[in-house]
Amino acid sequence: MRIENGWKLLENLYFERLGGTSEELEAAKRIQQALKNDLGLDSTIEAFDVIRSNIKKVSFEVLEPYQKTYHATAYMNCVDVDNLELDLHYFEVDHPVSRKMVNGKCALISGYLGLKMYKALCESNAKAFITYNGDADFGPYDVDDRELRALLKECGDLPGVHISTQDAMELVEKQASKIRITVEQEVYTCQSHNVICDIKGESEDWIVCTAHYDSVPNSKGAYDNATGSVCLYGMAENLKDKSLKHNVRFVWCGSEERGLLGSKAYVQMHKDELENVKLCVNIDMIGTIMGSRIAVSTADMSLVHFIDYYGKMVGFPINSSQGVYSSDSTPFADAGVPAMSFARWTNSDTGRFHCRYDVMEHLSKRMLKEDIEFISQFTETMANAYVIPVVREMPQNMKDELDKYLGRTLLKK
Ligand SMILES: [Zn+2]
Image 1 (tube, helix red, strand yellow):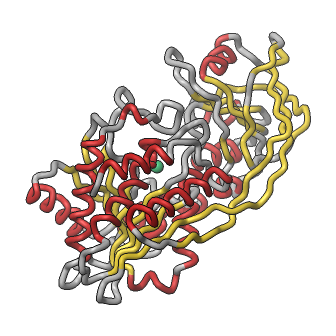
Image 2 (cartoon, helix red, strand yellow):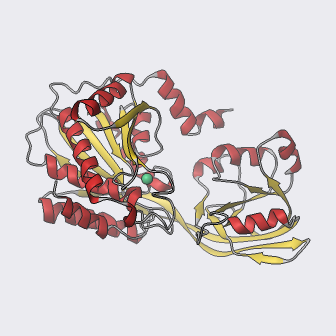
Image 3 (cartoon, protein in one colour):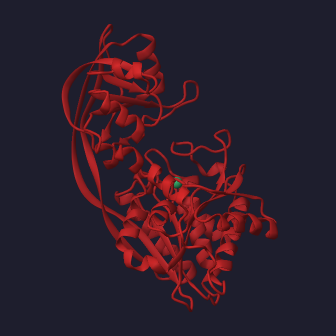
């Protein structure tokens, strides 16, 4: 591939691209333009419904033992409340003692609000929640917009706000005991989009390659996942003039950051075609200066071994493992398609994501090209296999992990 063109696409996608917004659609169109203008490839856009909301009003105040109004954002899609006054409890861990203490109160929790924690709060009869993020020392860090996903809402309807780490520390240290919350929002349905481009082969079989092109709030999403978007583009360039035995489809997925919504919609809308999809190759976060390569397969161990052998054969150090990866490969795996994700993983000292520090300065043209060439070669090998050898059967341990990841294990209880 011509990395200069790929880098140009990366720069063209370097803006906030939230799932379901006009900015996300603009990014989709820029991908289409690059495919058409640079590579002469046609593509289509498929729309699917998502919800968004206008937060009209949000306030969070401490009333006792001191009075202070804090900067807060509301959880998109949480229930509205008007001047709700509650006692505050720092729910530092899900523990029988904490569960008793939080009864009837507002819970301040640490870390990301996952299904497990939200379910614990609902079961403990908490009446509202507060989350925080940022770094105690390192800043500035944004109080970003959060969302209460549909899966969590199945456990109950709590109002929630999000504040900075420094403010959360102040609440606990000054023993804030009584708070007041207001959230008013207008939830509406809008559209997010997947971009689809095909390279035809001779057989009936397909390999679907995916990468999300949306970003989180306050992030231009260079690493996560403009890099993966450029990877699909580079792969399309490498494969377009080759004669392939099997078909390759590229899908740039929208709204991944909001709960894998684009790939879930794709799997739903293309249910009847999945039988012929023999493998899903997903790319999420590559091309950093520092880091190391991984491949995570939600598939039979033979695929895990093959990637390990393949890396050794072509001289590419990559750690291959079996597991469920939190990205667009997962809805495919859940529909029974063997699926895998490639990434170049870096630690937070050399590349952050899901925040304003996900910037191009952490990326390397050379590493990005190396990643793309390897993933492209691997995919071409599969696309030119006499028969695509990937075992179709999803192993039981992966089915169990999918149940866990997708919340079914918890919601069943
Ligand atoms: Zn991502």
